Amino acid sequence: MIAIKQCRLFKQKGNATVETILIATVTVPLLTGIPLMGKIADINHTTAQSSRYLAWEQTIAGPHYKDIEQLESEVNNRFFVRPDLQIRSDREVLTDERFENPFWSGFGYDEDDEENRLVVLGRGFDTVVSNQRPESIAGTLSAGIDEIGDTLASITGGQWDIEENGLYTGRVSIEVAGNTILTSGVDCNGQESETIAACVSRSNTIYADSWDARDPAQAARRSRSFVPAGALESVGDTLAGVTTIVPFFADIQGLRSDSNGGFGYINPHVLPMDRYAED
Image 1 (cartoon, rainbow, N blue to C red):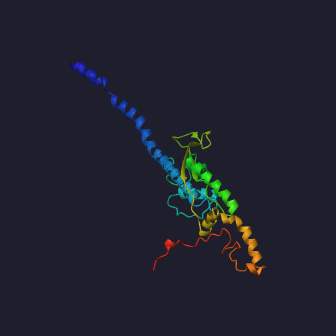
Image 2: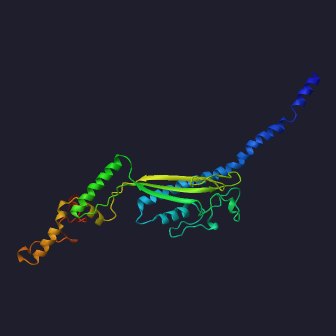
Image 3: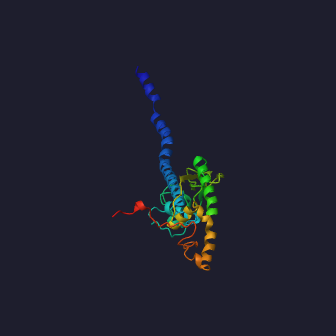
């Protein structure tokens, strides 16, 4: 019996070493890759936030106030640079190395090691904005109302400049550079690359029904589209000229189309009677 026990103990020698090696082959790469996975997740989250900002800025500013170059500069400077930089809208695109995000590095942060950075400013960054008509009953109704308004405005002399699309989309794409673990991948053009590990691309869409007016004058021009008397503007101007020649028509006032009257004139500053306080 003693010999058998010794034989069994002898066969179990070295098992702990083998188990440690097997577990280490799994846990060491896993523990090493967790920080890298967190950095890529942070890049993904930042890209999603920047696309939301890009879509939102279209709805409140539009192409008349901010062009795509300015929007791209703001997205880059607000989201993809050092998080401790002060936000300023009057800056040019920041691409210098001193503005790099120190958290987005492969293993540690070395200012002189450009290959160690997951995101390099000014490289592999792209923004796309669009404004489309929704493919639904809302889009069909919007297109129909816009056609009716434009037709009436051409007759009455109004200005029907209502938004006919309203589906604002902002897409931001950023390329993640390769490193020791992620050596190769696919870039944002869909091509295999030896230096790019992945392409993080996120989009955000906002539907804005832009029926608001920026000032009372714009509201008046839109309202005039539905005033049939506006089609008689030229007749009123002619009669206004006659009143200066024929004394019989001198008592006819307010026929000339100006800021104080005329056919189709809309005064946006007159309040309805229910808005006035009673004595």
